[in-house]
Picture (cartoon, rainbow, N blue to C red):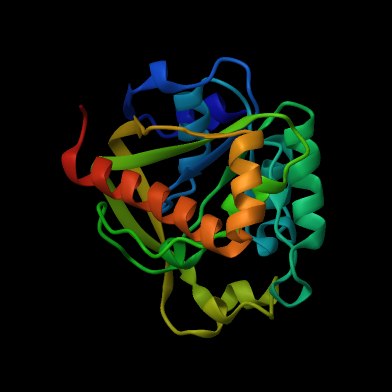
Amino acid sequence: MSNWLLALSPVNISVHGRDRLPATQPLVVVSNHRSIMDAPLLMNAVDRSVRFACHHYMSQVPGLRTVISALGCLPLDAPDKGQTAFFRRAMKALEDGEAVGIFPEGAAPMVSPTSPDNLSTFHRGFAHLAMRAPVDELAIVPVAIAARRETNNPVMPLRWLSLFDATEPLFQQSGWHPAVVYHQVDLLIGRPIRVDARLRSHYRSKGAGALATEITQCCQDEIATQLKQGAY
């Protein structure tokens, strides 16, 4: 399904750093996020299926709901419901040896025009997910999506999306939802963070919040560096 989506919009893809990927472990893949093409591109980069977290409203839109289901996405809970159900589904996927993809910037870069090297502050949820997953070991893999050529066009008023998710503040603003289409893109796989019994012990003793913040900043810095430096 991901290859089919990429074929609909031909893009020149270069992947760097595949040798850094663990061969068989469950993965938590984290990346910057500006385009609906990001999930299929990341599956191409890590060369395996990835269960991506996606915005709650995407599971409410006819047609789009079919696409995210075919991709195996994990819709987030509604903004006013917490994320207990999502975390339960994501941890089950990791327990089954799968890869879970998280876009830690949230939905804001998807609905506001941004430059290719722009990076918003990461949320810490992916770090807590990785530390609490019921598996012996996994790897958090930061990946930078560096667009070299792209087009960006408005597709619909943001307020229209409130018909599908009236609880989302991003859909209460004026303006149009942009659509970024890549024509040439580098996928830069950064240094994975190994999550094992030693790190989990540190997570418990140091304080969950402190270590989650440290891991989150580490991944954000890695992706920011790759976006600035380009292919290595």
